Structures are given as C-alpha cells and as structure tokens.
Image (cartoon, rainbow, N blue to C red; front, side, top):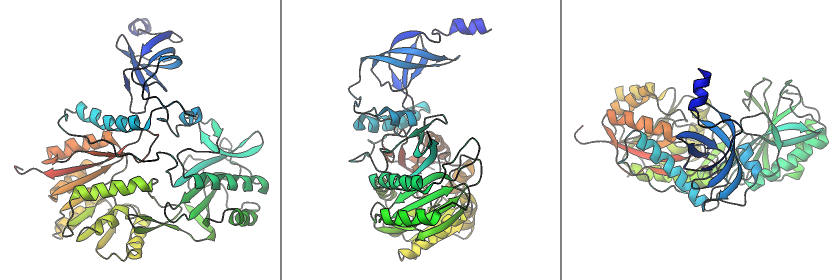
Length: 463
C-alpha cells in the first residue's frame, strides 16, 4: 500500500524543483502544482518562479522551501524582516500593502465562489494610511535567554522563543514602555517564567494604550502573588514611564498557555484606562475585550451603521454586545438598542459605558442571544435591525433561527472569519434573507491574514 502511495505522489522528500506559484492559501502560503499535486511554499507569491527544496511529502499535498527566486512578483515588498514572518507577527509583510488588501478581498470572493454565490459583490478592502504600529494592546511572553530576562515572541507553531525589541504592528509607545519595564525587571532581580517546569515569577507583560487618551496600563502577569521587590518595580515604572496611569498585577498559577489568570490586583493608579471610539468614551480594564485597532474599528462601525440605514426611529438588537462598543455606536443613531452577551463582567462594563456617555436608550442582558431573542419576541419587541458580531466560529443554527423568526428588516453581520460568514450566509438564504449590498471587507489587522467584513441581509419581498 505504501509503495502504491509513493508511486502516486509525483515528488519526493529532499527533491529539488523549479516551480511557478499559482495561488496563495488563506494563511498566505504560496501554492505550486507538480502534476496536479499541491506544494505549499512559505514566503512565495503568485507568479513567482522559484527553485525549491521539498521538505515534507503527504498523500494529498506537500511542503517545500524556497532556495532561490528566479522571477519575483511585482507585488513583492523587499524591505522585510524575516523575524516577523518567522514569529507569525506579520505573515503578509512580504506583500505590498495594496496587494494585501486585494488578497483579503479575494479570500472572501473565493469562499463565495466555492458555494456558488458568484453573483455577490465584494467591495475593495478598506485599508489604513499607515498599516504599521496600529495595535493598542500588547501581550508578550517573558523568558530567560542566556541568563538574562527577555521579552519576545515564539516562532510560528513552536515553543522556540525569540527575543524582540520592536514588534512592528504595536503602537510605538507600547514597545517603548515594554522595553523600559523589561529593563526595570532585569535590575529588580525577579525571575522570568520557565514554561517547562512552571517556575519563575513573570510570565507575560501586557500593555494597553488609549489611541486618543494616550493613557497607558501595564499589567504584570505573574505565576505567584508574592513577587520580590514589587514595590520597587512599581515605583520605577511610575518614575520612568510618566504616561502609565494604571499598574496591575494578574496572577496565573496554572501550567497553561492561557495568558491571564482569574485574579487581577491594582498596584498603582487607576484600575482602568479610558479611550474613545467615534467620540464615545470607554473604560477599559485589564480583562476587557476591546478592539485592538481603534482607527479601523471606527471605520468598521461607521460602515455597519451606514449599511443598517438607521434614521433614529429603529429598534436594534446587538446579539454579541461585549462591553457595548457597537451598541453605543448604534444607540446614537437608533431609537432603542437591546444588547445581550454571555459574559457577566462584559455586561457590567457595557452598562457602565452607557452611563459614562449619558445614553439611556439601551438595555443590556446577560445570557445567550437565542434565549433573549425568544424573550423579547414574547414581550412583543419587533427589531428593525439585528446586529451580529460573533467570534471566529460564527453563528449557531439556533441563533440564525431565532434572529430570522423575529423578522427584522435587516440583519447586519460583522464578521472576523470569512469562512464562517459564507457558511452562515447560506443558512440565512434558506430562511428567506439575502445579501442586498456589496460585502465590505475592512483591514483590521494589516500585515496579517485576518480580514473583517460587514454584510447586510434583508428579507426578500416574495418571502
């Protein structure tokens, strides 16, 4: 059987070949075909002719490494740092930015074509003027390398730690703060986390910065509560980082790859930092889920509001409301907004943020969206618009059933995963809802393969 398989595969391990790249995978890897057999090749772009070394051969596909570029793509960006490609921080860094935007549009188009929705239009991806240093939050591991405490990142798909000082896509002030805190930790004599033995003190550093407020929060993620010289560390951070308005300690004793533990203690300053989105104020804690690219989030939300065509008379349901970021944006343009979220702490934040902005046309509930939609329907609430912004796994069939049962005029779907978006669109279509406007991709994460989008579904007249 093994002999037959070997005969069927037209390449062998360690073989050297010259191939032409035909396509990119959704992870940004080049695809070449040898007698119909796909080879996945990191760092290669469409149209490039490359010499490769085959490193892995499977029954249906293999992997190869570029040894020489014979012909390069006009879309290739040459001024790149391999570290960012190796760590997965910026897997599209070798692609020019206009080509990145088209790659993201094509991701959506290709997935629609797979389910025969070729008739749907996908608009050009909304990009950024400066597609670097946009992240307002950093979570970096702390490890010991050659006897010295370092911050950095892991190589893709490995536990190989790489010390880094510039993280390319993070706010430059965050990188600056990380280096100052790293140096303070070095002189304070605290130990870095040892993953293999679950020993050492400092596991991660988390830094958040308000894009508009410029307030900075530093979170020391520690394995134990009692850290030697903690008072001195806090004092030095305050002295050397005047923009830091909040210093927190998060305790995570477990042997896990989850970054934050359940307990967070305030060490100095405030327990939150504040920032604004579309002129709305939000208080952000160490544990808050808050969009990491505020400039693009404003565009994304404005696009969702525009596509919902709100006039001020509508009732809106926000089915994954989180800390209220979309709900509050919608509330400025709608008559009433009902928000629901399964995380109780997020709902507390949402209520707090609504009162912070003097908005009284919102109601927030803790629980599953399906349950609350059934409750609201029984209470005679008829939404004009249902807004969904689910996690990467997309919507459940029961949520789609509950949403369509309420018969809103429009369903506005904010997606962070085109694969589950396309799957869910087909389910909505089976229930009489159809895409009525071009799907709008938005680049929330430049230099990476992620793409967000806004899709509007409406009940068709004959239904």
